Amino acid sequence: MKYIFLLMLFLASFNTSAISGNELTQLNINNQHYYIVGTIDAFLIFNNVSKSPAFCIPDNATHSQSWNIVNKYLTDHPQDLHQPAAGIILMALSQAFPCSNDK
Image (cartoon, rainbow, N blue to C red; front, side, top):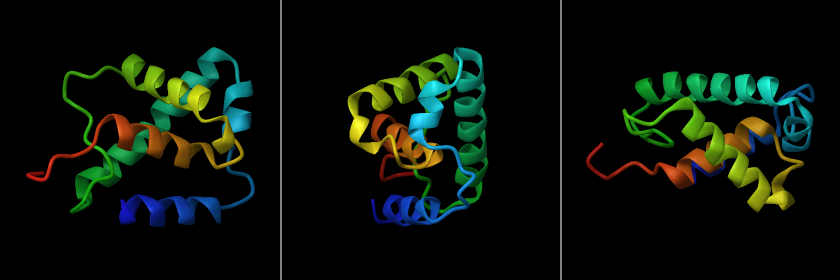
């Protein structure tokens, strides 16, 4: 959890051009899907080289499933919508797909 907090802190101080959760919810469905899936792919690359990945998506999970998880998180946590969208995506996936201790 400390790792996630530090990553959220980093993302919060990121360039002002970073898209927020509010902006993400305003995108049309296709652009929203592409943004979420692209962000997830970037995190997966980071997870592959990290000794302590932020989340562990099961091999049989689909992009649509991950997209639904992020959208549910956006709906259930309106207080976070001002945060960077990448951080929100990270939080949603880390809650839905925590890594086991043996990873």
